[in-house]
Amino acid sequence: MGEKREASPESISRPEQTRAEIEERIRTYRLQARKGSLGLILFVVISIFAIPGFRFLPDLPEKARQILGAPPKPEWISLALVVYVFSALILILARITQGSGGYRGWSHLFYITSFYIFFGFTEVSRDSFWAVFVSGLIILGLENFAVRSHSKEVIEEELEKLKRLEKARGS
Amino acid sequence: MFRQFASKEIINVAMVVTGFTIVCCILLYTFIKSDMIEGAKAYESTLADTIYRSMKYSMLKSDFGSLEQILKDIGDQDRVEYARIFKGLGEVRFSSDESEIGTMVAGDSPGCAKCHQGSEPSFSMGSMTHSSLYLNEREGGTLSMVVPIPNHPDCSTGDCHRYHPPEKELLGVLEVGVSQEHVDHCLTLLKWRMFVFCVMILILTLGGVTALLWRNVMLPLTQIADFAEDRAAGNLDREPPRGTGDFKRLANAIEKMGSATRQPGQGEENTGEGSPDSERS
Image (cartoon, rainbow over all chains, first blue to last red; front, side):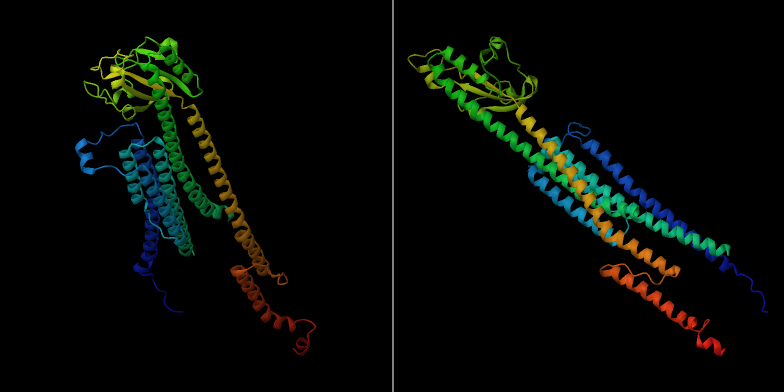
């Protein structure tokens, strides 16, 4: 019979290191999953400020209006909104199909806010507010759904690895 | 497994299709609403112009009875809420509603603002170009048109009519109010129709995707899973499920794996009881 080989410190710490890495990844993905909800909440807050008639922010000064010039026609802004929503949905679906993670909702939040500002300058009816609001809900809702599904899948895989690691340590 | 599939695939598709449809419906509603309001404004503008032209002769001939009758007949029309002429200071002189005669109009309504922005009122000889259209919330949300009646040369120089001195620039103001009930009713109907349309799209999307997923993915997968389990349990006689494309490949591969496992076992079975080789050993 050969000599009993004593376990080296390095070989004991390797499973611990792997476990720590897995747990760190799980924490990262859990945080990522929360970004979707944060994006939606921020969007709702911005929408409250954008409600026609709720003048939380002061009106633009006349001089600033002269510098900016005449606003675009509401029809052009509506057309731009339709094209933007269509493109955004296609891009999000493509990312879902590829399975690529990461939350890209912050840029959409910026674009939707821009549409609120454009419609605000043209002073169109309350109906345009609802069009932008529903667009934002759909796009940010889909982004939230995508990031949560992806994070959930990865977390489940990591938990599976953790379970196997525990089993191997136990045996 | 279907619920996992459903939550990822069906919800995505339903959100995208239905959401995009809702956004387009809202924008379409906005466009239709503004077109209908423009149509209502055009109708009111024509009506006010017609009244103004009809009244002009009666006023030139000082035929106030005829003028009152014109306003009364116009006021009796279905969608016309009121038609009145008031003097420059705001006293109602003629009206479709006799009880208004002698009363003062409200000076702070949006219709007055166009000409009364500064300390002095502004107007010119072009009546219709200086008319103003506004939503009169005070009088039940009617669309009101205010048309100034200027002092034409005929009004102060004719033999029959020297009532108005030439220095008086404004003789009065015509105000016509048309009910927006019909427009509001049409818009409400349109809103409900679009809502029903969106609900139908949602149901069709959910139902269609569910049916297609179930038929083309879940059912073949379940059949192949059952077939693989049977093979694993040792039942090698079951026929593979029918399918196309990748499902067929998968079923054939599982069948071949089962056959490959059987062949080495067949050699051992031949050396079992009753076989010629077993007697030799």
